[in-house]
Image (cartoon, rainbow, N blue to C red; front, top):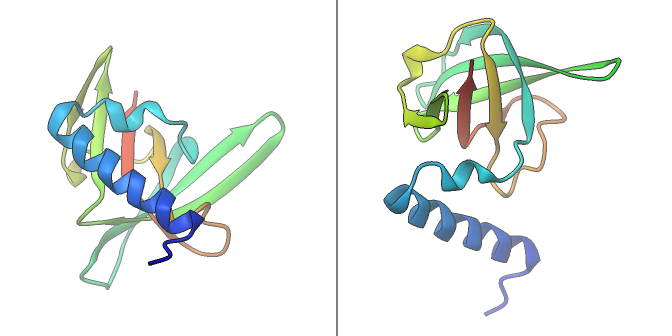
Length: 124
């Protein structure tokens, strides 16, 4: 059975995520975030599988980028308080918050349209 390079990466990420959920919530968030920025807007969505879509604005030097991120029921939400990271629910998301967003292994960047977030860390 041939898995392929990207299938293998996805498989390892799933195993790592499962192990990290059991051991420590902080471990999964040790990798570099796909998007780091502030929430500009939170929009409700008609799709039952999507809780909401958030517009995240990231700034790097003089460049500003905006990405629409879908928050689904499987998205893990965390909040950082000092050195402690705790799991929170969707209602903790507010416009103006600084967030870090990770996407599943098969989505490299939400270049064209919304991308489904795997993990969101609220950093205030």
